Image (cartoon, rainbow, N blue to C red; front, side, top):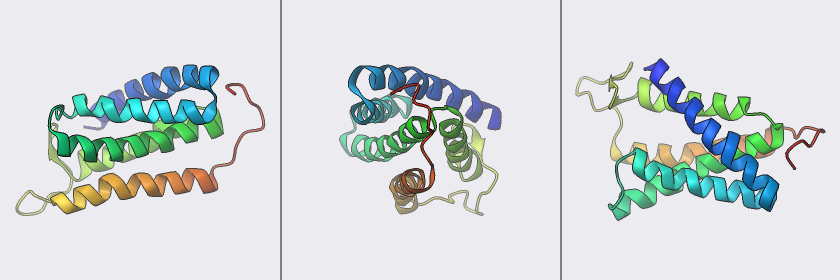
Length: 151
């Protein structure tokens, strides 16, 4: 599970923060680049989650993954490194996919007797609350670098 999470995170980070965000920051500036990258990340997850065409799940997934994409793009912009977005993304994916899951990779590390650890409400709160907390952490506690190689 950790291997699969690692490969998917590295691939997504190289595409969304390493390529798309970098290009959009150069072309449109930091703020617009981060927003465009976050929107692209949210839309991408409609397809990776297999929910395209189901409007209600698309809305919830877009908000959650878009917020998280925004926080990780902000971390990339502030640190001028892909290391923090990779670490945050891997931590989230491993926790959500491998620890508390009965998902595509099989049973997670922690399952209840009913093998249904995460209720729909818990998933929704996690999908929206965690990105907000990560954004607050990145915005408030991650210092910006003095060297501006991407701006």
